[in-house]
Amino acid sequence: MKVLIAGGGTGGHLFPGLALAEEFKRRDEGTEVLFVGTEHGIEAKIIPREGYPISFLRAEGFVGLSPSRKLKAAAKVILSVMDSYKILRSVRPDIVIGVGGYASGAIVLIAGLKSIPTMVHEQNSVPGLTNKILGKFVKSVCVTYPESISSFPHGKTSLTGNPIRSKILKGDRDAACRLFSLDRDMFTVFIFGGSSGARSINRTMVDALNHLTDLKENIQFLHQTGDRDYENIREAYRKAGVKGTIAPFIYQMAEAYAAADIVISRAGATTLAEVTALGKPVILIPYPFAAGRHQEYNAMKLREMGAAQMIGDSEMRGETLAGSIRELYRNRPLREEMIRASRGLGKPDACSRIVDIALSLVKGNRNVRKV
Image 1 (spheres, rainbow, N blue to C red):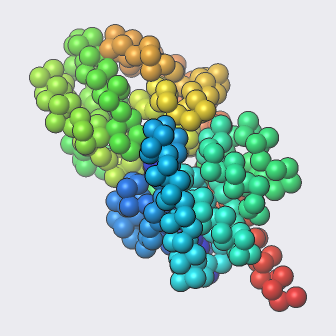
Image 2 (cartoon, rainbow, N blue to C red):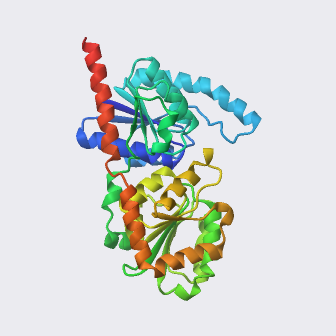
Image 3 (cartoon, rainbow, N blue to C red):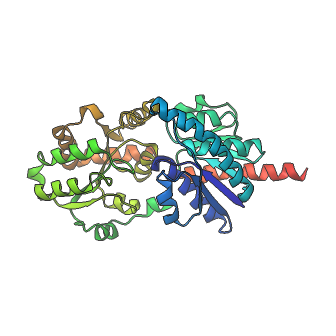
Protein backbone atom coordinates (compact mmCIF):
# COMPACT_ATOMS: atom_id res chain seq x y z
CA MET A 1 0.00 0.00 0.00
CA LYS A 2 1.13 3.54 -0.76
CA VAL A 3 0.23 6.40 1.60
CA LEU A 4 0.79 10.05 0.73
CA ILE A 5 0.76 12.50 3.65
CA ALA A 6 0.55 16.17 2.69
CA GLY A 7 1.05 19.27 4.81
CA GLY A 8 3.47 20.90 7.17
CA GLY A 9 4.96 24.34 7.46
CA THR A 10 5.05 24.03 11.25
CA GLY A 11 5.68 21.19 13.65
CA GLY A 12 2.02 21.34 14.68
CA HIS A 13 1.02 20.07 11.26
CA LEU A 14 4.03 17.91 10.54
CA PHE A 15 4.42 15.78 13.67
CA PRO A 16 0.88 14.32 13.55
CA GLY A 17 1.72 13.24 9.99
CA LEU A 18 4.88 11.54 11.21
CA ALA A 19 2.86 9.79 13.91
CA LEU A 20 0.48 8.44 11.26
CA ALA A 21 3.37 7.28 9.09
CA GLU A 22 4.81 5.40 12.04
CA GLU A 23 1.48 3.67 12.72
CA PHE A 24 1.04 2.63 9.07
CA LYS A 25 4.54 1.13 9.08
CA ARG A 26 3.95 -0.57 12.43
CA ARG A 27 0.94 -2.37 11.02
CA ASP A 28 2.60 -3.32 7.75
CA GLU A 29 6.32 -2.78 7.20
CA GLY A 30 5.70 -3.01 3.46
CA THR A 31 3.61 0.18 3.45
CA GLU A 32 5.26 2.96 1.46
CA VAL A 33 4.83 6.43 2.94
CA LEU A 34 5.65 9.59 1.01
CA PHE A 35 5.41 13.12 2.39
CA VAL A 36 4.54 16.22 0.38
CA GLY A 37 5.41 19.70 1.62
CA THR A 38 7.34 22.81 0.65
CA GLU A 39 11.06 23.48 0.58
CA HIS A 40 10.75 26.33 3.09
CA GLY A 41 8.65 24.44 5.66
CA ILE A 42 10.02 22.57 8.66
CA GLU A 43 9.28 19.32 6.83
CA ALA A 44 12.21 19.91 4.48
CA LYS A 45 14.56 19.47 7.44
CA ILE A 46 12.70 16.93 9.56
CA ILE A 47 11.35 14.38 7.07
CA PRO A 48 14.73 13.31 5.56
CA ARG A 49 16.07 12.93 9.09
CA GLU A 50 13.17 10.58 9.88
CA GLY A 51 13.98 8.45 6.85
CA TYR A 52 10.92 9.12 4.66
CA PRO A 53 10.96 10.39 1.07
CA ILE A 54 9.48 13.83 0.46
CA SER A 55 8.34 15.70 -2.64
CA PHE A 56 7.95 19.46 -2.75
CA LEU A 57 5.20 21.69 -4.04
CA ARG A 58 5.63 25.31 -5.05
CA ALA A 59 3.09 26.72 -2.61
CA GLU A 60 2.80 29.58 -0.17
CA GLY A 61 0.26 30.58 2.49
CA PHE A 62 -2.00 33.64 2.37
CA VAL A 63 -2.59 34.44 6.04
CA GLY A 64 -0.77 37.53 7.32
CA LEU A 65 0.79 38.47 3.97
CA SER A 66 0.93 41.90 2.35
CA PRO A 67 -1.23 42.42 -0.76
CA SER A 68 1.78 41.98 -3.06
CA ARG A 69 2.81 38.75 -1.32
CA LYS A 70 -0.76 37.48 -1.58
CA LEU A 71 -0.66 37.98 -5.35
CA LYS A 72 2.56 35.99 -5.48
CA ALA A 73 1.01 33.25 -3.36
CA ALA A 74 -2.05 33.16 -5.63
CA ALA A 75 0.20 32.66 -8.66
CA LYS A 76 1.86 29.74 -6.90
CA VAL A 77 -1.51 27.99 -6.61
CA ILE A 78 -1.28 27.19 -10.33
CA LEU A 79 2.22 25.84 -9.87
CA SER A 80 1.15 23.72 -6.89
CA VAL A 81 -1.66 22.23 -8.99
CA MET A 82 0.84 21.28 -11.71
CA ASP A 83 3.20 19.80 -9.10
CA SER A 84 0.34 17.86 -7.52
CA TYR A 85 -0.70 16.21 -10.79
CA LYS A 86 2.91 15.24 -11.42
CA ILE A 87 3.38 13.71 -7.96
CA LEU A 88 0.10 11.79 -8.06
CA ARG A 89 0.89 10.34 -11.50
CA SER A 90 4.32 9.26 -10.28
CA VAL A 91 3.35 7.83 -6.88
CA ARG A 92 -0.16 6.49 -7.57
CA PRO A 93 -1.08 6.45 -3.86
CA ASP A 94 -3.84 4.33 -2.37
CA ILE A 95 -4.81 7.20 -0.05
CA VAL A 96 -3.90 10.86 0.41
CA ILE A 97 -4.06 12.37 3.91
CA GLY A 98 -3.91 16.11 4.56
CA VAL A 99 -2.55 17.14 7.95
CA GLY A 100 -3.06 20.88 7.58
CA GLY A 101 -1.15 23.80 6.16
CA TYR A 102 -1.25 25.26 2.66
CA ALA A 103 0.98 22.49 1.28
CA SER A 104 -1.90 20.04 1.65
CA GLY A 105 -4.51 22.04 -0.26
CA ALA A 106 -3.97 21.39 -3.95
CA ILE A 107 -2.80 17.80 -3.78
CA VAL A 108 -5.59 16.58 -1.49
CA LEU A 109 -8.22 18.31 -3.63
CA ILE A 110 -6.85 16.92 -6.88
CA ALA A 111 -6.52 13.44 -5.40
CA GLY A 112 -10.21 13.57 -4.51
CA LEU A 113 -11.12 14.68 -8.03
CA LYS A 114 -9.15 11.71 -9.34
CA SER A 115 -11.22 9.37 -7.10
CA ILE A 116 -8.26 8.56 -4.83
CA PRO A 117 -9.46 8.10 -1.21
CA THR A 118 -8.77 11.28 0.75
CA MET A 119 -9.03 12.45 4.33
CA VAL A 120 -7.88 15.37 6.46
CA HIS A 121 -6.99 15.72 10.10
CA GLU A 122 -7.68 18.95 11.97
CA GLN A 123 -5.52 19.48 15.04
CA ASN A 124 -7.00 22.67 16.46
CA SER A 125 -10.26 23.67 18.12
CA VAL A 126 -10.60 26.40 15.46
CA PRO A 127 -10.09 24.74 12.05
CA GLY A 128 -7.60 26.17 9.59
CA LEU A 129 -8.76 27.61 6.26
CA THR A 130 -7.21 24.83 4.15
CA ASN A 131 -8.92 22.06 6.08
CA LYS A 132 -12.26 23.88 6.17
CA ILE A 133 -12.24 24.00 2.38
CA LEU A 134 -10.97 20.45 1.92
CA GLY A 135 -13.53 19.12 4.38
CA LYS A 136 -16.24 19.65 1.77
CA PHE A 137 -14.50 17.37 -0.73
CA VAL A 138 -12.65 14.61 1.14
CA LYS A 139 -14.12 11.25 2.11
CA SER A 140 -13.40 11.59 5.83
CA VAL A 141 -12.47 14.27 8.37
CA CYS A 142 -10.81 13.52 11.72
CA VAL A 143 -10.80 16.19 14.42
CA THR A 144 -9.07 16.67 17.76
CA TYR A 145 -11.68 18.71 19.64
CA PRO A 146 -15.49 18.45 19.79
CA GLU A 147 -15.70 22.22 19.17
CA SER A 148 -14.50 21.84 15.58
CA ILE A 149 -16.99 19.15 14.52
CA SER A 150 -19.58 21.74 13.47
CA SER A 151 -17.13 23.22 10.95
CA PHE A 152 -17.22 20.06 8.83
CA PRO A 153 -19.93 18.07 7.04
CA HIS A 154 -22.04 15.86 9.27
CA GLY A 155 -21.72 12.14 8.68
CA LYS A 156 -18.07 11.99 7.65
CA THR A 157 -16.45 13.70 10.64
CA SER A 158 -14.95 11.67 13.50
CA LEU A 159 -13.63 12.80 16.89
CA THR A 160 -10.30 10.99 17.14
CA GLY A 161 -7.90 13.22 19.06
CA ASN A 162 -4.51 14.34 17.79
CA PRO A 163 -2.00 11.62 16.83
CA ILE A 164 1.34 11.59 18.61
CA ARG A 165 4.46 9.56 17.88
CA SER A 166 4.65 6.41 19.98
CA LYS A 167 8.21 7.19 21.01
CA ILE A 168 6.96 10.31 22.82
CA LEU A 169 5.47 7.93 25.39
CA LYS A 170 8.68 5.96 25.82
CA GLY A 171 11.14 8.54 27.13
CA ASP A 172 13.32 7.53 30.09
CA ARG A 173 14.34 10.17 32.65
CA ASP A 174 17.72 8.63 33.44
CA ALA A 175 18.67 8.41 29.76
CA ALA A 176 17.27 11.88 29.14
CA CYS A 177 19.33 13.46 31.90
CA ARG A 178 22.46 11.83 30.54
CA LEU A 179 21.65 13.04 27.01
CA PHE A 180 21.06 16.65 28.08
CA SER A 181 23.70 16.73 30.86
CA LEU A 182 21.09 17.35 33.53
CA ASP A 183 21.01 16.37 37.19
CA ARG A 184 18.64 13.41 37.62
CA ASP A 185 17.46 14.58 41.03
CA MET A 186 16.87 18.27 40.33
CA PHE A 187 13.50 19.81 39.54
CA THR A 188 13.56 20.39 35.77
CA VAL A 189 11.70 22.99 33.71
CA PHE A 190 11.46 22.31 29.97
CA ILE A 191 10.84 25.46 27.89
CA PHE A 192 10.12 25.61 24.18
CA GLY A 193 8.17 28.00 22.00
CA GLY A 194 7.42 25.68 19.11
CA SER A 195 9.63 24.35 16.35
CA SER A 196 11.13 27.78 15.62
CA GLY A 197 11.30 29.05 19.16
CA ALA A 198 9.38 32.06 20.52
CA ARG A 199 11.21 35.34 21.09
CA SER A 200 8.76 36.67 23.69
CA ILE A 201 9.01 33.48 25.75
CA ASN A 202 12.79 33.50 25.46
CA ARG A 203 13.12 37.09 26.63
CA THR A 204 10.62 36.70 29.44
CA MET A 205 12.33 33.55 30.66
CA VAL A 206 15.63 35.42 30.88
CA ASP A 207 13.92 38.09 32.98
CA ALA A 208 12.29 35.38 35.11
CA LEU A 209 15.71 34.07 36.07
CA ASN A 210 16.27 37.32 37.97
CA HIS A 211 13.28 36.45 40.17
CA LEU A 212 14.39 32.88 40.84
CA THR A 213 17.88 33.51 42.22
CA ASP A 214 17.00 31.91 45.55
CA LEU A 215 16.14 28.65 43.77
CA LYS A 216 19.28 28.38 41.63
CA GLU A 217 20.46 25.35 43.56
CA ASN A 218 17.09 23.62 43.31
CA ILE A 219 15.88 24.14 39.73
CA GLN A 220 17.50 23.44 36.36
CA PHE A 221 16.32 24.27 32.86
CA LEU A 222 16.14 22.64 29.43
CA HIS A 223 15.40 25.41 26.93
CA GLN A 224 14.83 25.18 23.18
CA THR A 225 15.38 28.70 21.88
CA GLY A 226 15.19 28.51 18.10
CA ASP A 227 18.16 29.50 15.95
CA ARG A 228 17.73 33.28 16.18
CA ASP A 229 18.01 33.62 19.93
CA TYR A 230 20.26 30.70 20.79
CA GLU A 231 23.54 32.53 21.42
CA ASN A 232 21.97 35.38 23.40
CA ILE A 233 19.83 33.11 25.58
CA ARG A 234 22.68 30.73 26.28
CA GLU A 235 24.83 33.65 27.40
CA ALA A 236 22.01 34.98 29.61
CA TYR A 237 21.75 31.65 31.43
CA ARG A 238 25.51 31.56 31.86
CA LYS A 239 25.57 35.06 33.38
CA ALA A 240 22.68 34.20 35.70
CA GLY A 241 24.61 31.19 36.98
CA VAL A 242 21.64 28.90 36.38
CA LYS A 243 22.05 25.20 35.70
CA GLY A 244 20.67 23.64 32.57
CA THR A 245 21.03 22.96 28.86
CA ILE A 246 20.20 25.43 26.10
CA ALA A 247 19.69 24.26 22.50
CA PRO A 248 18.46 25.90 19.30
CA PHE A 249 16.36 22.83 18.43
CA ILE A 250 15.65 19.56 20.22
CA TYR A 251 15.05 16.51 18.06
CA GLN A 252 14.77 14.13 21.03
CA MET A 253 11.43 15.37 22.33
CA ALA A 254 10.60 12.10 24.09
CA GLU A 255 13.69 12.51 26.24
CA ALA A 256 13.03 16.23 26.79
CA TYR A 257 9.57 15.48 28.13
CA ALA A 258 10.91 12.60 30.23
CA ALA A 259 13.40 14.93 31.92
CA ALA A 260 10.76 17.58 32.65
CA ASP A 261 8.84 18.07 35.89
CA ILE A 262 6.93 20.94 34.29
CA VAL A 263 6.69 22.32 30.75
CA ILE A 264 6.44 25.91 29.52
CA SER A 265 5.26 26.21 25.93
CA ARG A 266 2.96 27.67 23.34
CA ALA A 267 -0.46 26.04 23.02
CA GLY A 268 -0.21 24.35 19.65
CA ALA A 269 -2.42 21.29 19.27
CA THR A 270 0.42 18.81 18.86
CA THR A 271 2.16 20.07 21.99
CA LEU A 272 -1.07 19.75 23.95
CA ALA A 273 -1.67 16.24 22.63
CA GLU A 274 1.80 15.26 23.81
CA VAL A 275 1.67 16.84 27.27
CA THR A 276 -1.80 15.43 27.99
CA ALA A 277 -0.84 11.94 26.84
CA LEU A 278 2.12 12.17 29.22
CA GLY A 279 0.28 14.01 31.97
CA LYS A 280 2.79 16.84 32.27
CA PRO A 281 1.95 19.98 34.30
CA VAL A 282 2.25 22.84 31.85
CA ILE A 283 2.33 26.64 31.77
CA LEU A 284 0.80 27.65 28.44
CA ILE A 285 1.55 30.93 26.69
CA PRO A 286 -0.66 30.96 23.56
CA TYR A 287 0.75 32.46 20.38
CA PRO A 288 -1.32 35.66 20.04
CA PHE A 289 -1.36 35.72 16.23
CA ALA A 290 -2.50 32.14 15.63
CA ALA A 291 -5.31 31.95 13.08
CA GLY A 292 -8.71 32.30 14.71
CA ARG A 293 -6.99 32.61 18.12
CA HIS A 294 -6.99 28.82 18.17
CA GLN A 295 -4.04 28.56 20.56
CA GLU A 296 -5.86 30.71 23.09
CA TYR A 297 -8.92 28.48 22.88
CA ASN A 298 -6.75 25.37 23.13
CA ALA A 299 -5.08 26.71 26.28
CA MET A 300 -8.34 27.87 27.88
CA LYS A 301 -9.76 24.37 27.54
CA LEU A 302 -6.84 22.84 29.45
CA ARG A 303 -6.93 25.57 32.09
CA GLU A 304 -10.66 25.06 32.66
CA MET A 305 -10.06 21.35 33.17
CA GLY A 306 -7.31 22.01 35.72
CA ALA A 307 -4.58 20.58 33.49
CA ALA A 308 -2.65 23.78 32.82
CA GLN A 309 -1.86 27.30 33.90
CA MET A 310 -2.15 29.99 31.25
CA ILE A 311 -0.41 33.34 30.77
CA GLY A 312 -1.49 35.59 27.92
CA ASP A 313 1.34 36.78 25.70
CA SER A 314 0.45 40.40 26.49
CA GLU A 315 0.63 39.60 30.21
CA MET A 316 4.06 38.06 29.97
CA ARG A 317 6.41 39.44 32.60
CA GLY A 318 9.47 37.84 34.09
CA GLU A 319 8.03 38.17 37.58
CA THR A 320 4.73 36.59 36.51
CA LEU A 321 6.39 33.61 34.85
CA ALA A 322 8.78 33.16 37.76
CA GLY A 323 5.79 33.16 40.12
CA SER A 324 4.14 30.33 38.21
CA ILE A 325 7.37 28.32 38.16
CA ARG A 326 7.87 28.90 41.88
CA GLU A 327 4.28 27.85 42.69
CA LEU A 328 4.53 24.60 40.75
CA TYR A 329 7.93 23.83 42.22
CA ARG A 330 6.75 24.31 45.79
CA ASN A 331 3.22 22.90 45.48
CA ARG A 332 3.50 19.19 44.81
CA PRO A 333 -0.23 18.50 45.43
CA LEU A 334 -1.08 21.07 42.74
CA ARG A 335 1.26 19.35 40.29
CA GLU A 336 -0.32 15.99 41.07
CA GLU A 337 -3.81 17.42 40.46
CA MET A 338 -2.65 18.81 37.11
CA ILE A 339 -1.13 15.45 36.18
CA ARG A 340 -4.43 13.66 36.84
CA ALA A 341 -6.45 16.25 34.93
CA SER A 342 -4.01 16.21 32.03
CA ARG A 343 -4.05 12.45 31.66
CA GLY A 344 -7.83 12.55 31.67
CA LEU A 345 -7.73 14.72 28.54
CA GLY A 346 -5.04 12.74 26.70
CA LYS A 347 -5.90 10.44 23.80
CA PRO A 348 -2.85 8.24 23.22
CA ASP A 349 -4.88 5.99 20.88
CA ALA A 350 -5.70 8.80 18.41
CA CYS A 351 -3.20 7.52 15.87
CA SER A 352 -4.72 4.07 15.82
CA ARG A 353 -8.22 5.49 15.36
CA ILE A 354 -7.21 7.60 12.37
CA VAL A 355 -5.33 4.79 10.64
CA ASP A 356 -8.35 2.50 11.14
CA ILE A 357 -10.48 5.05 9.27
CA ALA A 358 -7.86 5.44 6.54
CA LEU A 359 -7.62 1.68 5.98
CA SER A 360 -11.41 1.40 5.78
CA LEU A 361 -11.42 4.05 3.03
CA VAL A 362 -8.76 2.16 1.08
CA LYS A 363 -10.62 -1.12 1.47
CA GLY A 364 -13.90 0.46 0.42
CA ASN A 365 -12.30 1.98 -2.68
CA ARG A 366 -10.80 -1.37 -3.68
CA ASN A 367 -14.18 -3.07 -3.29
CA VAL A 368 -15.77 -0.44 -5.52
CA ARG A 369 -13.11 -1.04 -8.18
CA LYS A 370 -13.75 -4.78 -8.07
CA VAL A 371 -17.48 -4.23 -8.65
